[in-house]
Length: 428
Ligand code: GDP
Ligand code: IMO
Ligand code: MG
Image (cartoon, rainbow, N blue to C red):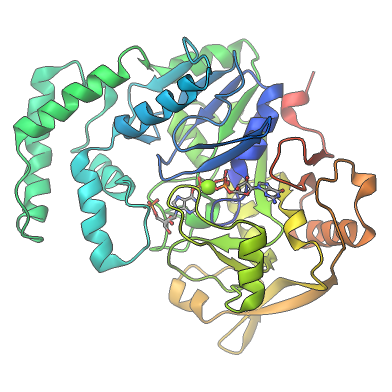
């Protein structure tokens, strides 16, 4: 199967946007399968920088079909803003962008609830309404794109949703109630924005797969933020893991050809939650500055730390990752010694397992193995041109994680990349 899942194998922001954009040259279709506009996927191409929140990162490549699957939660205002941005730059999106009729909508009250919950829960969410939208989906009071033309249904489901909304925002937070009228007005606007994009994308994908098209499944966030496998409760509310591809797009397991995990050569995290290899001193600050580690969505400074092989090995296992794309080598240029976490010491015991409970993970003390740093990898485009210390770092990490590092990224631009391994989208 000439398809590849490209997902984050750390806490998000690994450089998925760059890799998806780059590989979309070799593909026909790019699909988002989960998350929403909490994502911020950066693409640097032709001297210009783009950040995609909702649109698949293949959107800049003309003629490639782009799909937003049923597993995504969609805020039409964010969709409209992003569409305007790309269209104003002359990107032709006509007849190549498809949104699932079964995707759930992020309502204005979801955004309001996200901010209210944040005050007490302190997860450090992006406040885009993601958590509440998924909660309402599973509570069976969500509103989907396929509902937008069904006025009677909309009134019926809105009343059911508002019972819950108002119980919380009036009863718990003492704010003004949301009325059916204002929700119906917003939904009318949603209908206008989304007109012409909504379709049965599972069916469309079935056709593409039958025709043998090359497809990229683009993950948002990362495995360590997955609601099942991440550092719960400091996670997002969806499944970035490979399993999410099937439920988020309505396709079978045979549709997945290859799973490519994206990781940084170090680690970052934005928002709250445990982070065993975090560097709180000047080294962390220097990596943040050099790596421009500020959120692509919210602008928040990202927490930085050394590479954690325990966490990545775990992410690789739960997602069936077969190869890695490793980014941001250049950010480590000039650092003398590079510690890599190879195990944890928890309550006096050594382990190579990633614990399920966050209080346990908070107590994990990283066990480090040190590697020699290198002078410069910035902009290197051929594996042979990498300094020996960098190739030794790569070989050591491959051994620690157990999968090949098939792509090495040495700068933000799409051209600053070394592609080593075989990729499913290249299959004949
Ligand atoms: P995503 O959410 O996984 O798509 O990643 P983000 O776009 O949020 O964050 C990755 C950041 O690193 C962006 O600013 C990219 O332009 C940048 N980036 C990606 N690869 C490299 C690289 O190899 N070197 C450097 N210096 N920056 C990179
Ligand atoms: P991309 O796709 C990094 C984090 C938030 C917060 C937690 C829950 O660009 O890698 P949410 O708004 O999803 O309920 O927030 O998840 N988070 C991300 N961190 N990259 C992202 O996306 C993220 N999307 C959400 O900071 O800790
Ligand atoms: Mg990001």
